[in-house]
Every structure is written in C-alpha cells, then in structure tokens.
Length: 288
Image 1 (cartoon, rainbow, N blue to C red):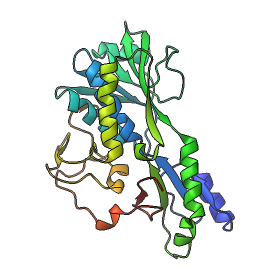
Image 2: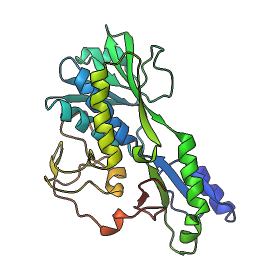
Image 3: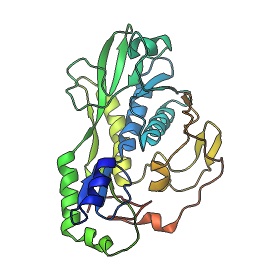
Image 4: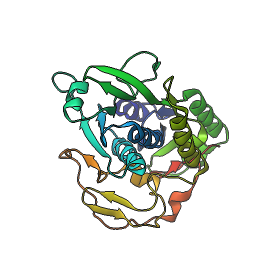
C-alpha cells in the first residue's frame, strides 16, 4: 500500500489499482472482497461438525477487515449452535504447533490460513478437523475468483467510473468491494462431505447471494454488550471494514490497538446504499 501511494505521488499521470481497502489518493483505486461472507458459511459448517461446541480460529495476519471475518464466522457458528464458542488466536503459531494447542483447548474443528490448495491433500488450510493434535482432515475453504473480479473492474473502468470521480478535487479513496453475489467469493468443499451438510450450507449461501441473509443484520452482540438491536438493517460497508469489536461468543484477548465500540445502535447514513465505484467510506456492492 505504502509503495503504491509513493508511486502515485511520483507519477500523477499514471492510474493504479491496489488490492487493499481505502488508499486515499485520486490516482489509486483499491479492490478487495467480502471474505466475511465465506467465513459466515464456514462458521455455520464448523458448528455443525464440532464435537463439543468449541471451534478454533487462527488469524495469521491482523489487517483491515480481519475482525469482520472473525465475527461473521462466530455469528455463523452461533446460528447453528447457540452454545458455540470460537477460540481465537492470531500471530505466531504456539510452540508445539497450532493443532496441538487447539486440541488442548478441546477444539476438534478449526479454521486456519486461507489457501487455494487442493483439499485432497492433508493440510491445515481452511476449515479442517483435528485428529490427535497432529493429523488434519480438510472440510472446506474460502476461494477467490480473481478472473471474475478483474472482469468486473475492467467493465467498470470501461463504463467511465474512474473519470466520474477523477474531476473531484477532494482527496478520497475509491473501493471495489465484491462478494458472493458477484461470483468473486465462494467456498470449496472437501470430497466426501455429507450431502446433508452441503445442502445446509448451500441454503445459507443462496440467502447471501439473494440478499435475504446478512451476518451483520438485525440483533448483534459484542463482548461488551449490545451492538445493535433486533430489526436494524445490516451494518453499512464502512462499519464492517472498520469493525473494532468481537462477537460475544469469541474467546480471545484484544490487541491494545483495538478498542470496543460503544454498546448503542448505529446510525446509518443514507449515502451508504449506493452502487458502483464510490468515495471513501463507500464501496461497490454488487455485479455491474
């Protein structure tokens, strides 16, 4: 991100695209995906397969959007199992290995680093089952469809969205932010996953694609209390990206740089309902 901004300042006649969220420069467009949608499905899938209501989640990189992915996973788990607890770790892997550490916590199912590798190969990527603290069996993983994403970006640019914002003298970030409804994000199942389980996850996936299900709609609870009450619409994109609270069924410690949000209902600016390439605090929401 830093090098892209430096290049944008040095070469103002060049236009840049950076895979990130919210670079504030007129010559830069950022793009990322709604990975929290896939994490929501993986959380529900994990809860349906966990032995004792305890599910592991390891976040190796703490970056923008990481908390929304953790919370969506936890919300999906609680949807299937109200007693589900998500044991959260991030950063360096504990001595003896992550699988062994999670097994000591009573975890039998966990999600780790997201990698687009074959689930037929035993590996600790994506959602997987732990066996004896050493062996792992793949269950599912989130995947990116980068070809589809770049197609959407190119179409947007050909339609003149860059020029629509280039004349504005205000320094702002413009973001492309697509998810399952656009075919950019999806999940891949491991071979042999029970068809009943696939059917359940597919129902939830269809709800996300159609817009009838959103992990951050309605009543939400953090570790500090109520985030928003029943009946509220889904959180706008800016509050999802800038999320700084953990769901009440996540067991973890906050980093010192993260503070809890006040336990009051959110206010929703009307301009957050737009589509297309949007200014700072606003994101492209669907297929073009």
